Image (tube, rainbow, N blue to C red; front, side, top):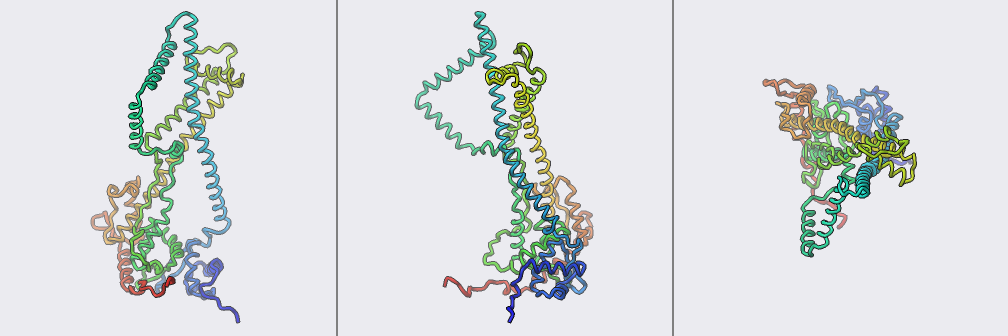
Length: 501
């Protein structure tokens, strides 16, 4: 005798492929009964896997005059997840992610070497040039029997400051040293801990991780909590208020949630389509976890650094750009003179650097090319990129945050419509949080008009509000469906068996 398989013991991919083939033969419109008759599959398998097929091929739901749900696929059967196109898109996305990670790592290392390294190098070259200049002037003054001159006086002043500091440090009493140490310790404890330099610089260039990366998880928790409070019965508008999706997009995306939470679309006797999630109702703890009806997505900040820190990093990069431009200009205009290089005016720093590279480092005539490329072209290119990357990121971040604000605005608007569908007005932007306030001041009015068109709304007498008649009917209808539920069907009841006993 052939082995009898259980109705829930099946391969999901095979059932989904069978349903897809059957739907193609019906030209993309069929009921559950149609698919059962065409495939011979158990109704349980058809009802369980049909939401997955609907999600993969962007299916829609229609309701017939008899109240039967009809699955419709107006966009055909181009898979969102399988086939050459999606595979190439996934491969390209994975390649871009890997390449971006590698490029980011290399660019971060390059940033630390270039920004800090060049800044220190340029300052060191400038200090060496000043010391060499003062030493040269002092030598000339001594050879002429004079003790005056700017360079000589500057050298004496530096020597005086060093001696004062040295003697001051040498003859401090132990009590003075202890008091200074306690003061520095107390001052360090009172200040907030500073971020490491490399993390602060990376934050300025690349920004911070997206705080809304787990928004999908937040929305799933909110949907589960809302379904538990409302007897497992939700309208599409409830889903829209949680996700911030417009109606047409929500009709497509809810199929994924139906599949993930084992929900199903149903129709009331009055023809209202609602979504039932019986598996989300039976909960052992009513702690309100994730109970927000419309969780607002957070905005992504440009950087976690204080504004003064970013100003300092931009200023350091500006110093590198100035020095690089100076060396590039000097190498191109002065180069390696045929005769003796006269050290005067604006060429003094270049002359001392050329002498250092030519004689002390032994580069010879090639010193000019080293200065041209190493101290001119390279730091200039880096400085431009150091400013260009944050500038491009700021523009993209602004567009991304505007999309987040618009979705949050829809969440607020849809929640208000569900609460009072008889009179819905566009919320005042001043009353909204920053994360739900798009730059376009008329965004709320336009979104309300689109919602009114979808819900068959009528303008209110004040000319600013709308009466969403269809939403009124649907909320009243689904309330009666919830009222007909038996609470005993969703109670856990007492423990009947305990494995520990």
